[in-house]
Structure formats: structure tokens, C-alpha cells
Image 1: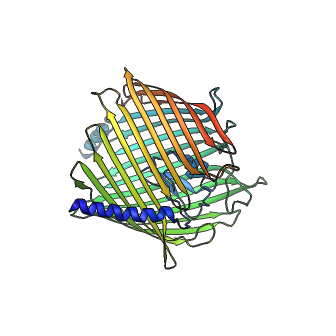
Image 2: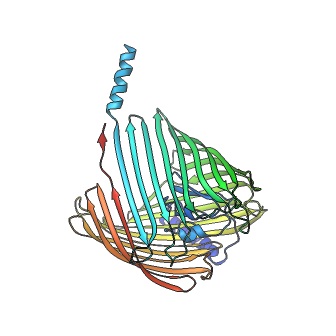
Image 3: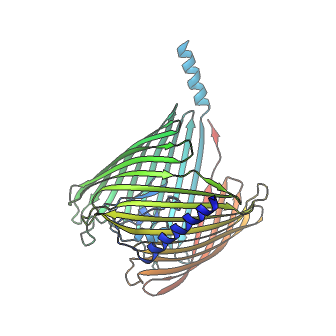
Length: 82
Length: 399
């Protein structure tokens, strides 16, 4: 039963993920994936708006300062910002 | 008698003090002839005595363009002083960060067309107080930023920010974790119009790790973030619901596999939209032969999509060959957005690398790699470069 529930949850999530991948909506917030981020600070170095800071080992983006230039996305060695 | 006891206790605590140090140097060039591209030197020390721990870390960075790669130029020092003091169920963590800019590109405030200003030193004191009360965990924090800025005509200006917040989690008897937290930030400059305030309230639910047959573990979490405030365009920041599922499976004693899927939806003016999705997987082979340097093969890939999309594949291997000496190999293929003028909006790059590593117990590790990168800039660039690093852990000193 648990296995079927997990498969169903995975299928539903895959469906939503598929929608996200094929029809991304405009949004003004980048996300730092805390599972992938290891706090190297490269994003903080390259942000031209002072919008990122590494706090307690994770990069944190200030949504009011981020201008979506995506320089941090390009620089992140782990692909943790999206 | 009481004073004697306190004195003896203080002596005992002082006698139990330990000092750990660590240092590292990483170097990266843009060519095989050694044109420096990025050098970072870090040193740190941790002093621990009884319930008190003090850490000092200093890092010096020089990042420059070697010509082939358009790179954000920066040079400066980053000092972090932090402490941890635990009292019964409480933990106090004050810290102070002081970044000194020696040279570097300017920072932009306001729209990208606005005149840039140079950023000087940044000083940030802050602190966090945590409390563990059985199944409840509570915390609160506060931080203050003071940035020295210099306008194009040489005038000294300032930028101050404050941030504070707090929250708590409750681990239910069934193992799930419920959380409530809030954060508020504000910025103010005295030379340009930037009076920005925003706050966020988070409600979260995380499942307990669910163990399935075949040595598989599944975890899921869901979070609703309610924003108040505006982004740089003056538009309200949308509320966001984000969910994530992780699965970890140990295939054998040496091979493990994990998979993550995440999705986020934004809610703004009664309208829901899918904001982003992410899927990633990683497989790890570890061959640990009784305390020797383990040989590993780490294969990972991820794909994320929002207004931008990023695709990554990375493979890293370390094959131990003789008495701490290992062969290193690396493949990194990426497809990322870029703002480099003339490059395709989505830039593709592939890096192939190989090298050697030497580990001397747990006290020293040094490595060097030769890499070949092919990437899309104004034209397809293909070049070789060097990377090297040194990590030192001198060992614990009993004071």
C-alpha cells in the first residue's frame, strides 16, 4: 500500500513538474536549493546588486534586491539557484 | 567555599580548552602558463572550552579575468568571528562579519541603467538565540548591515539594512514536523532612493523519513510562504507554495542512490501559476578499504526550469592507487543562462579534467588538475587551464 502511495505521489509530482518544465510562468524570485548549496559564496561574489549573502552555510537571496540578471545562476557550481 | 568551588570549576574548564585550526589555498588559472584567475586563501581557528566555542575565520580572495573568460573582478578580505554558548536548553550564537574590499567592480543599486557605485567595507553584526524544549525548537535572530559606498563623483555614502525574525518547529508524536517562522528585512540608502521593506511568514510541514523495503527512505516537505513587500520593479512579491520529495536508496554497501523532485507555485492576485520545477539524481560509489583513502565515483545530474532553465551533469572520480596518492577525474557539462554579451542566451559548456591528489592522514590534502573547457561565449572557446588546492588541518591542541 505504501509503495503504491509513493508511486502515486511521484506520478503526481512528475505531472506538475512536467507542467513547470513546459510552461514556466513569470516570477520574480529565484530559489536557492538548500540541498545542493554548500555555501561556497561564489554567487555572493558576483551579484552586482548585493542581493545575496551566505548565512549559516546557505546562500540567501533578498527578493527585493534581486534584479534577475542570473549571474549567480551561471556562476553556481552546483546549479543550486533556479 | 563557594568561591573555591567556582575557581576550581573555572580552572577545570580552562584546562579542558582545545584549539583546532584549518587552512586552505585554492588556485585556478585561465591557461596552462599560469595566468591567475582566482586565488583564495582561508585560515580558521576554533577555540572550545566547556559550553563556549569561538571561531575565527579569515579568507582573502583575488578574482580576476585572465582574458579568455569574462569574469567579475574582485579582491578583498572576509573576516568572520562567531561564537556558540550553550546554557542548559539554550544556545546563543553571536557573530560578526567584516568584509573589506581592496578592489573590484562596482555594485549596482536600482535599475541596471543607473550609475553604479563602488562598494567598500561591509560590516555585519548579528546573533541567534535557540531553545530546545523537548519536541519544540524555538529560535530568533537579528542582523544589521552597514555598507560603505562611493558614488561615481567620489562622494562617500552609506547603505544600511536590518533583518530580524524567528520561529519554531514542533515534532509531532507521529514524527512529522510542523513549523512557523517569520523574517523581516529593510534597506535604506542615503544617496539614492532605496527604501525597501519586505517580510515573509512561512508555514511548513515535513514528513518523518518513511522507510520502504529495499533499503529505501522517502522524505517529503511542503511550505507556504506569505510575502509582504515589493520587488525592484515595484511589483508585489507573490506568495509561494513549494513542495519537495526526496528518496534515498542503498543499493549495496558501496552504492547509494538519491533522487529529488521539487515544484513551486506562486499565488498573486487570486491567480496561481507554476513557478518552477526541479529534478535531480545522484549515484555514489564508495570503496572504503579499512581506513585508507576511499576511492569514489560520484555521478549527478539535475534539471531545473522556471523563467530560466539549467541542466547539469557532473562526474567526479577518485581512484586511490598508492599510500595516499590518488588519481582524480572530472567531467562537468552544463547548460545555463548567461548575461555575457554576444553569448547565446543559454550557454553550453563542457569541462574535462584529470589530476593527482595526495592525502597525508587527516592532516593534509593537496591536489592539482589539468582541465580542458569548451564553452560558448562570443565564439566557441576551447582552452586548457590548471586548478590546484591545499587543505591543512594541523590537529587539535590541548591548552
